[in-house]
Length: 389
Image (cartoon, rainbow, N blue to C red; front, top):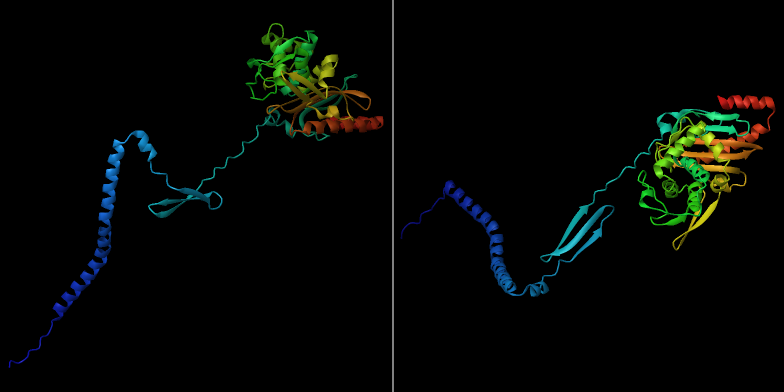
């Protein structure tokens, strides 16, 4: 019987076998998913073939039939996930797909307010005894021409709708028929500031109604239509405005149109006091400018207008004539002829900051005049000296 032999495995052969087994296990780890995917490929191929057959059949079918058998859109819905976050959820190939979108927020900074001419010139930094908010002011006794208060009264500034006081005075003095009908046209539309108006193109009113609206509620289209229909046309009317200003001694005044929308309509407080004095002598201008409200019929509509000066309705005030104005270049403006403490006064306030500041300035002046009326002559002289500084 042959003798059994023992076999020793060399370390080199053992390591080679170990490497072989490790490589086989790694290959199996990668091959298994590939095999699983390969098993699915025949099904996908069948679907692809089926889709190709379907496409051929659809190509042969009429266009209307293809549209009728169109695949419905994927179901999709949106869910808000907080401020500026939106999640879109939809079904795709049997799976739920969630797409999160963060919407960018665009913040628009507010435009800085435009500075008026008075602010640009630094007139608002001028102090005064009454702490007025207007950069230019003048208070005159209409009978004696005594200057009770002044502040930058020679400064030439845009006057906005104070312009309409000259417009109204010229129309009234021309003695044109007040019942003549005037139609608003495209020429009366504001192209200077783009302001709106309740008087539509094609609206027809009498000259008297347009004058009333221009002086009481500062209607721009009404004022422009009055100048446009003046004998000789708009250019002639503007020339007449400047000629009248020159005749009244308004040396620093210039008009380029009849509404005041242009910042090139300019004057000083001194000049405007002269205009108020002249206009207060016209009964029509006095009556219409101090009207608290007015209703006009335009087509099948009734339009209700009110005054732009709230002091007209204030029983503490006795106002004989008034006009307000505003554009950004001019600030808030106000002129009045009024009676305070038994005195007929002309008040001019230009380039006031804030919607109610011109009214506040007028109230300050009235209280100051009333208080001054109660003073002794020596005290009045001291107060006048302080106000004039």
